[in-house]
Length: 214
Image 1 (cartoon, rainbow, N blue to C red):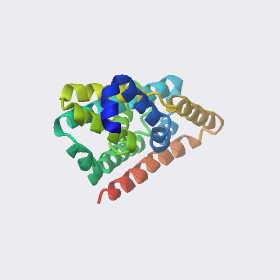
Image 2: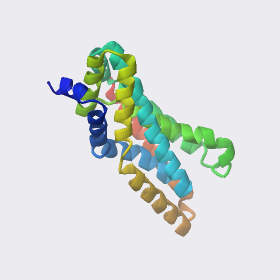
Image 3: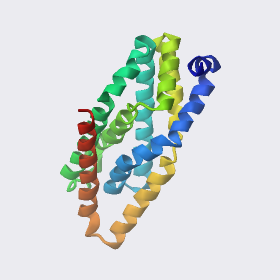
Image 4: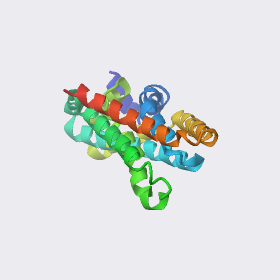
């Protein structure tokens, strides 16, 4: 009954459901990944906000993709997600981001030449972290399946993602970035260690997520 009620209420209900994700589970589960990234990057307030925005954009893209797929595949998609594909995607994106940070720790001054590759990682993290089944996502996919249309499913996914994008991470991550910059200004020798720490954390937790899929 809840699924059909969600489908009947429409986009506003889906948006509120997305907000419930952005202010609860999303912040807690995403903070270790994006917090490690921001602390290592030392990119300033503007760069941190850009990274956070790209992370949110990645989530919107993921929910749009999942919504469209559920509109075509029906409830089979949720069962597929429960198989552990989300852990593989998250693990790969996290390991890739951590490896990139460590490999380019001596090239941070060449921001113009590396900007596109830098921007790719928060986008991929946001995209991959949306593939873990939870109650709100299950309700979204059920509504998309009931709609029976890829277009309507994508619309539900986009609106859900816009709600999930309203997250406290837009406050928390700039604060973490500022804390990292303050540590660096007082102790310049910490620069390389913060990069190693953040990159290492991403590699370790990413590797762990991959093991959960097997």
